[in-house]
Amino acid sequence: MKPSKLHLSSTFVQLCEFALRKAADPELVLQAADALGQSGDAAGAQAIRDLVSTLPRSEKGRPASNRIVHLSGDELTRNSRIPVDRETSAPLASIVVSKSLPIEGPILPSRLAASIDSWIAEWRRAEELIKVGIEPARSCVLFGEPGTGKTQLALWLSGQLGLPVILARLDGLMSSFLGTTSRNIGNLFDFANRHRALLVLDEFDAIAKLRDDPNEVGEIKRVVNTLLQKLDERAERGLTIGITNHPQLLDPAVWRRFELQVELPKPELNARIEIIERYAEPLKFGCSQAKLLAVLLEGASGAEIQDVVKSLKKSWILDGPKLSFAERLQTVLGIHAARVPADASGILNLPLRELAREFVGRYAFTSAELGEVFGVNRTTISRWVT
Image 1 (cartoon, one colour):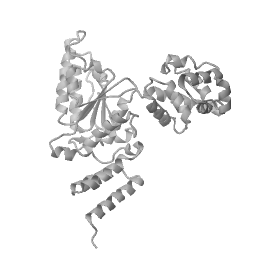
Image 2 (cartoon, rainbow, N blue to C red):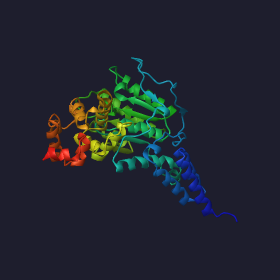
Image 3 (tube, rainbow, N blue to C red):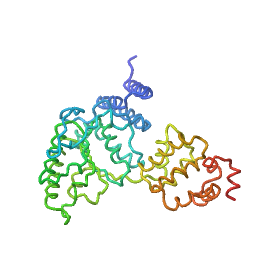
Image 4 (spheres, helix red, strand yellow):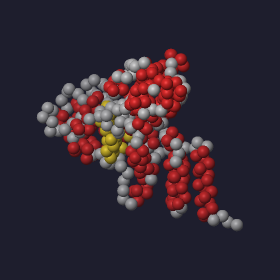
C-alpha cells in the first residue's frame, strides 16, 4: 500500500527529531522545515520548527554553518584589507569571523529573549516575508548601562544569522584633523558595503550626538550628517547594529535610521541566579548559595556578577574547601565592594552568628538554606539565630 502524505509527513518530523537528539545542526533542520513548507505541508513544517524552538538555549546557540542571511558582497575573512586612518594608520575596525563568535548570548528576561528570537526568525523565513512585500529588519540599536551584554548580544546575533562581524568602535574614528572623521566614516561604510557581514558600531554615541548641542562645533554636525547618509545607503545593502551606553546623546534622526531599538536592563533576581550558575561552571554552587549571592548583588550588571563569580572560583582553588560559602563571600566581596549595595556591604564583616541572624532578618532565608551557606546543620543555625 502506498503511504499517505500524512504518514510521510509524520515520519519526516520524527526523523528531524531524531537528528536533533543526535546533535544535528539546528539550521539544517530548519532548512528541512522550509522545504517541507514549500511542498505544501505547512503543518509538518511548523512541527519541525517547534522542535527546534524547544531546544536548550546552548543547543540553539551553536553558530550556524549555513547561510541564513542571503546578502550580496564579497566573503569577509581575516585577510580582508581593513581601511585605516590616513593620519595615524590605525585600522578603522576589526574582523570577527564565525569561529570566534560567542556560542551563548547574554541571559535576558524571557520576553526580551523572545523578541530577539523573533528577529532571527525573520531572516530564517525571509523568503516567506518577501513574498508578501515585507523585508526583515536590517538595523537595530542596543542600549543600556555598561556591562548588560550589548556587545555580547550583537556578536551572538551575528553567529545566529551566519554572518562574520565588522566591529568598529566609533570613538576610534574620531580625528582632530578637519574632515578626517567624515572620511573615516565613509571608508568604513564603503568597506562594510562591499562585504557580506554584520556591521557593529560600538560606542555609537561618540559620533551620533545631538546636532544642536551648543558645546559642539560645526564639524561634529557635518560628521553626524555623513553618518546619517551612510546609514541610509547601508539600509539597502547590509545589516547594522549600533551600541551605546548613552542613548540620551543620540540625535533623534539617528534613532529613526534603526528599525529596532532594544534596551538591555540590569538582571533581575532569577536572571542573576542564572548568570551565577552559568559562570560558576565547572564548579557547582548550591541553590541557596547562588540565591544568596544573587540577593547580595542586587543592582549589579551581568559583567559585574561575572567578575565576582570569577573571584569565588579563584578562592576555591587557592583557599581550598576549608572555608564555608559564607566565609568565602566575606573574603571575595571585600574586594568587590563597589558591586555590593551599601546596606549589604555593611553586614558582611560581622561574625558568622550575627551574619546568619542578619540573613534571616533581612532576606528571610530559612535555616535549611543558611545551613548550606554556612556549612553547618539546621540545628546549629537555629541555635545561632534564636
